[in-house]
Amino acid sequence: MSKRSRRAAPRPRGAPPHRTRWRGGGGGPPPLSGLDHTAQLRDLRQALDGTATVRVTNCLDACERANVIVVQPSAEGRKNGGRPVWLGLVNDPDAAAEITTWVREGGPGITDPPDILGLYAFQPSRRIRAELHDE
Image 1 (cartoon, rainbow, N blue to C red):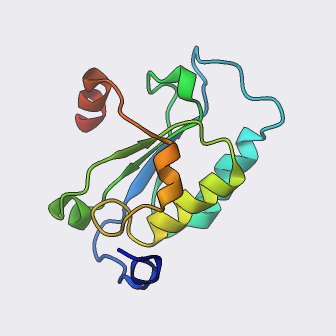
Image 2 (cartoon, rainbow, N blue to C red):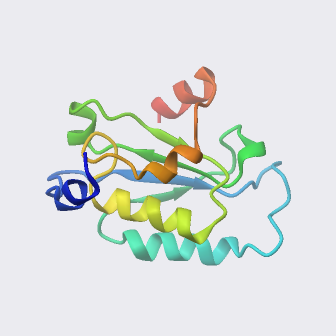
């Protein structure tokens, strides 16, 4: 899908995608120096207000990849084959902006992620995926 068609895609009806953000608390590594985690969370919530829910959790068992963002598909996105997308080392405001734009456009199963997000994507362990699926 081209960048132009991805941006022109209609917004899905029903429940929007939501994303879970983790910054390494609860036994994870110390916060990154120079990164204002509180401001990053505030900015994510403001940018996605009315579009998606931002939840914070203490541990996603991926400490070495902090900050981790999991973008979960909307109900419509899941029907279209969308699955949660795990993104790690999201410590750059430009990466967070790309994720925010993608979520506003529909997220997994609705629109293709920007190519740059391939640099951040990873697969968590099956145990962790199963635990999140049970929530």
